[in-house]
Length: 335
Image (cartoon, rainbow, N blue to C red; front, side):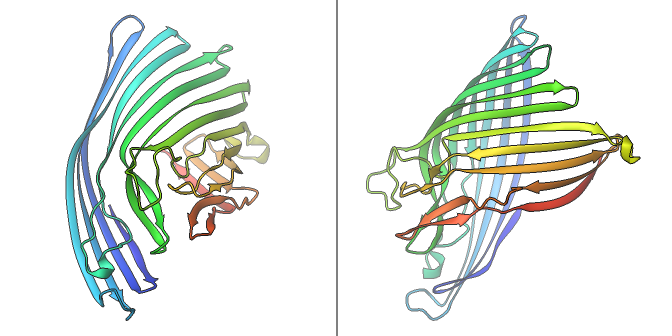
């Protein structure tokens, strides 16, 4: 894939940066019965990635930066990721499981250059690795009318790629920091009638930085919250299906309305201030003709909530407002 940062003006000139990533992978998964109700599932993925970064800076005469600088950088990485899980079917409608996963995110190049305007090489940020441990259950109750699932988890991330605001340069940089998170989630869905389903979920996450070197210049400290990770999330909604025949159409209509809650969370790695919690309602109406054709209309953020989506500290806390109401239509085909 290729991405470009459009040419944009800075205090001391303009940048025009371009990036390319080529990724190739092979993967497989197998499930082996160990006993009558006990199963082992293992999966492995091998990946090769090559990345290129091209930076161009043109000065505007401000003292300090060079008049012009152009750089090309590249890196490549090969890595293995995988997962192993044990599951036990207590009944046909109740399963418990435990899993361990190894994650890996290749290093890369920052989208905005801090060094190129001064004629210095722009270093890459390192690869990130992680271990994830999870245990949970999946169940069907009340003659399959009620679905209840739950899980707890622990993540241990090394060199996690976090976006950090640099007030001296007035833009974002990528920092590699260790962090850990743990929490749980519970979700349920009940079939009230053959045509009406009500669903909801609740999640809790505690994520904090660890192993941060003393005197970090970006303001990070071990024990600080990981930015933009809410402690509490929740959702509630319903979906109702009815016949399109009264309108002289084949198939069915389906209406879906969901409410999402995102709790307060730290704005930056220094935890200098928090972003407020917010609530968003999304709606969608779909007509399906029963033969592979669907037409839908949607309204995301139906009530045009102007929530705090991102934050940065210039010495004074500032925030970016989230996406307002988005209304649209679409269609899909299956054949």
